[in-house]
Length: 186
Image (cartoon, rainbow, N blue to C red; front, top):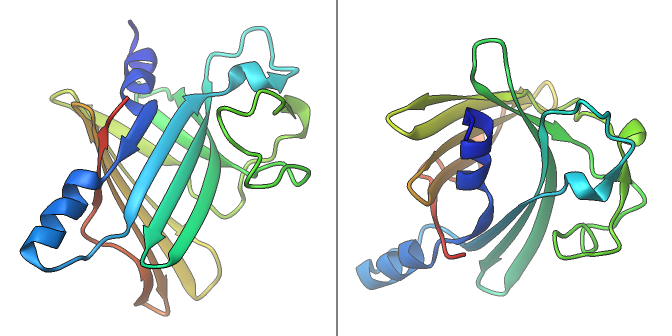
């Protein structure tokens, strides 16, 4: 199994942070939303992929619950290997003709055209470095001159540690410096 295949195997599946939420509830300090990620390779949903295409497109379905607030945030990512043999995450725009409710791994009718896919102009690609069977990456993106988005991830042994922070003029407006800890459940 090559490095990219090994990484994709770690990344894909169903993850939640139930253990983290239970611990926070027991300790009396709920800091994070209840969250679930469903990650799946979706190359088979993309027409016109080049014959020699060697990357993996992944749909990441993110579901968040905090009190009565519920949010769905789907993403389309491309994972490849760069010249330094590191994994690279490139974010793509979800095609405008597909709603976020329809943009799911289990949607058998979902199709996209490779020729129409657009790289996100806002997101700075993230490079994961591997050490001791763990993959760690960080990306800092400037969404506007005032708004910065920092994404840090660590993936190892069936767990994902994800810290996402939005800052406006240097002040945190949304997100968590302490990561959401997702555990693979399937």
